[in-house]
Image (cartoon, rainbow, N blue to C red):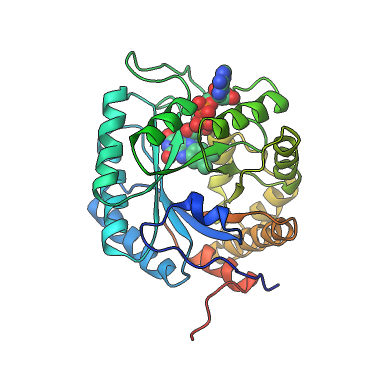
Length: 306
Ligand code: FAD
């Protein structure tokens, strides 16, 4: 199925809020900070492969500890200065005072990064553990949205949860918190990975019913490895479809067959989501390019040579 792309591609330092306001659909990729120099080499290889797909932006997640945080900042800066891509920098409140948050925002600004995904982050080591606020930090991501906004000319995104955040008491309250983040100044949201399109549509409709029309971009994770399934359930709280899990287990020793099923499932989700008029698709790449490139082929999104 061919999908029309009407949005002109943003320039390197474009603000994503402006891009979403112009309409059309965005296509974006998420990476995580590599732990080693070799990992960084592999990541930039994947980035070069994916650069050809001309994504609207790429994002780099923010780790829990010092070393990986430095890598996030370094990789995001390198994307801004060495590639044609528009970076979105993730930033979390975990173990940070407000002064430290300001400092990281300043490092992004120095590299020309104009887009920040403002997050609270999970407790380090155990995502389900008790959240502890830094004594000189913030309690909620909405506070970080306000800080980034007050720090300069940035576009700010936030996290959204189609199956509700695990700590939210119910879906309705969770939708209200998301609207609160938009009211704090967020221009757009990107969702946690999910595997049932209905969960996304329910959140979108609840937010709309609260009078908010800001873009909520679905986060898509193509499964490429059976061991990921259990890990996902713990990390994201996303309910994994039993029939998909059974199909993947049947071929679990065949890497290509697993990826084929994961790509097919993710592509079918994308087709349904695009038919629903979503503002974009955000692909969680796990620093690899093959699955995302295959989805692009299936959706006929690969840019044609001019
Ligand atoms: P918040 O918006 O602060 O919400 C935290 C909790 O407080 C929720 O239960 C919420 O319902 C509740 N809440 C919110 N506002 C209020 C309020 N006003 N009053 C009372 N309760 C409230 N984690 C990382 O460590 N690094 C990353 O790079 C990263 N990237 C992510 C990208 C995406 C797209 C998503 C969806 C998640 C990402 N995460 C990342 C995970 C995220 O940090 C965790 O899910 C975290 O537990 C919640 O973050 P938040 O920004 O939604 O927090």
